[in-house]
Image 1: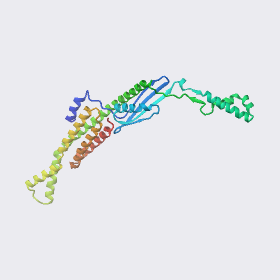
Image 2: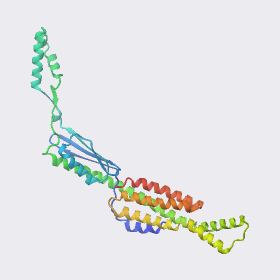
Image 3: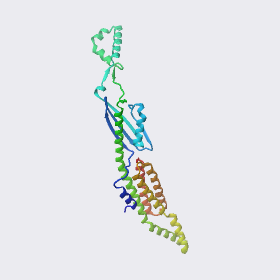
Length: 313
């Protein structure tokens, strides 16, 4: 039997609820510039704050703060890595010869050859001389230019926005999986809590038998008034009704929070801690084998909830 609390929650939220997001995600977007193609990638894992790492040297310094603010506003929280890679066009990736430097090398080599009496050798092997000059430092240079400029920044910024939108789509898809998983586990805890009640009478009877056996050991005829006092004392001491009520309240609060808030992750963690306190107290008071087994099952479900809640935004 599924708890009434979860039934009501499921009926109210089966068609719509605020979409929670996972903090784990990946987003990618590409854009074509005049000189080549840029690729923007964003990856995130769970974290307590927005820990943003810009893993690129292509982003102009004056744009870094704006990009960080854009990422933080879009993703809110998590350990976030941001990448920009560039693939130049074939024509723009070609190297060019530094003619002035090549001529300077030629003149110096020719002058050195003349002084060493080897100028005739150079004249006979011009290809060898040319190959040597081309291997000299900085003679062959790749074209160096800033890929991201003020002129193409709107295109780059749109590419960043697209990558962020894509990672948020990924996070939302993962959030749906998390939502289903943790709410089912809360339902399991509510079901286990209801099972505890089936052992309440048996548990009270066991306390009564224990008290009577103690009187028997003392070889004393139990006074009915004294027996009732002892019963009341032990039952109150081991009573778990308040724990069960508070646990159900915490479970309801958990379900309401995950269904009604945009970024409930931190709050869900705190609520799970309160659920754990009630479960632990129930276990310490149980004094009953079957209830202890149920408590272990509730603890197992709660640990999984805590683990999953760490990844909820």
